[in-house]
Image (cartoon, rainbow, N blue to C red):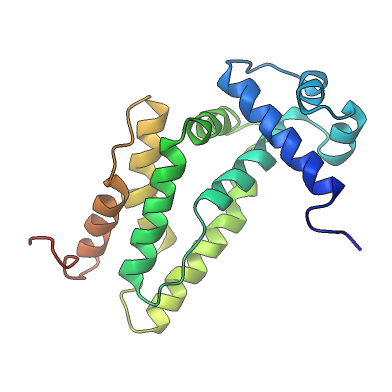
Length: 189
C-alpha cells in the first residue's frame, strides 16, 4: 500500500522542483545526473521511475499545471469556464508555469510528445463541458476551450508576452458569448 505524502511523493516533488529550477536557470540540456544532484536523490531512482529527462519534464509539467488549474464544478458553464481560465492565467503568469509550457513545446513531434500526457487533462475538461450540456447549457467542444481560451494565453507565453490580469475571464467571456450566453453580470453588451 502506498502512502500519500510518503517517500515516493517527496522524491517526485524534489525531482519536479529540480527540473523547474534547472529550466528557469536556462539549463535546457541538463541530464538525469544533474537533476538527481539538484533533487538530492540517486540517479537510479529517476531512471527507474521516469526513464528519461523528457519523461521527468512531462510529469513535472502535467502535475504542476493540473494542480495549478484544477477543473472546477461551480454548477454553471460560465462559472466553470471562468474559474478554469482564471486558474490557467495564474499558472501561466507564474514564471515556473511559463518555463514549463515553453519546455513542453520543444517536445511536440518528438518521441516524448506531450500530447499523449495531456489527454487526461482534456478528458477532465470534456467531463466539465458534458456536465454543463447535461444541465441544458450550451454544448461547447474541447476545441472551443483550446481555440478561444488556452491558445491565446499559451501564445503569449511562447512569445514572452505578459499574461495580463483578467485575461482569463475576458477570453472565457468571448467564448461564452460566441456560444450564445449573455455577458457576465456587470459587463456591457
